[in-house]
Every structure is written in C-alpha cells, then in structure tokens.
Image (cartoon, rainbow, N blue to C red; front, side, top):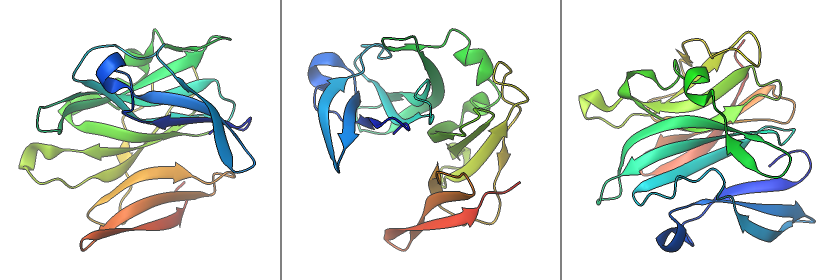
Length: 194
C-alpha cells in the first residue's frame, strides 16, 4: 500500500477470463473498496502469472513478478519487473530489464520484492533451485541513483534456512520476514542491515 491508501494485491478471481492477477483498491477505515484490475501491466498470456506486488510509498513505482507456471502449479521461472505510474495507470518501465539485470541473473527464482522509499535498495526473495532443494533466502540489491541499474545483490546471512517475503517497516529501520519452522511459519523482524 502506498502512503495515500492505494492498496495493491494479487488475486486469481478473474484469471480465467483475463490472464491477469494484480488488483488495486482504496483502503480507508479498515476496509478496501473500489477494487479494480491493474491490467495495464498484465501480459494477457495464459500460463503467465504476476504475483508478489509491491508499491513504493509515493505510489509511483510498482515492482512485481513475471512467472510462467507449469500445469502442476509450480513456477518455472520468476523475474522481477518494475512499472511506473504515468498519471493515469501503471506502465511497465522500458528500462526494467536493464535496471534489474543483476537481480534477475542466474536462472534463480526471484519474488516478494520490497523497494525502499528512496528507490535505491531492493529487498527480495531468491530461490536457487539447482540442488533440487527449495530453500528461499532474502537478498538485497542497491544502486547509486534512481536511474542506475541495481548492483549485484547480496544474500542476508543469519536469518535461517527457509526465509522469505521481506517487508520494510514504515521508518525502514526493521525488515520483517517469515521463517518456516516445522510445518508452519512465524513472522520475524531484524534491524535493517547496513
């Protein structure tokens, strides 16, 4: 959700008809209203699923996942994509592939993005599934300016064996995430690593 109360979320409610999954709503007084499909960023291709949407505090930059899913419901690939608000709708950024090249490199699955308010730090989850073991980890990529590509990301060490879905506190002093413990998940927070 951005600072103005625009909520963005993922739902497959109309996927069969539209092949789109990202929606927006107005959030106020504890409830969401005026739900709309954000079809301006959708590829409208069956089998392609967008998920894990994030919007920066200003509401000007959206980061989300492009993924091809198998018939069994597993992602075959997952790359991060950026879109910008053009005054009336979100449009995929022409330089998204270049800006996120280092983040999306190597054939790993990238998902669950969280962009800092200055747009210079991107947190996300990566799964390098070459070993056949599904063990997501949280990564961070930085860049020198908003127009520059992100530098190669670094894994955040010491969070556990199965951690994902970073989210920043409003003041960005904490990073929230969940960790798998046994058959369940628990939410944790750590001070934002410098």
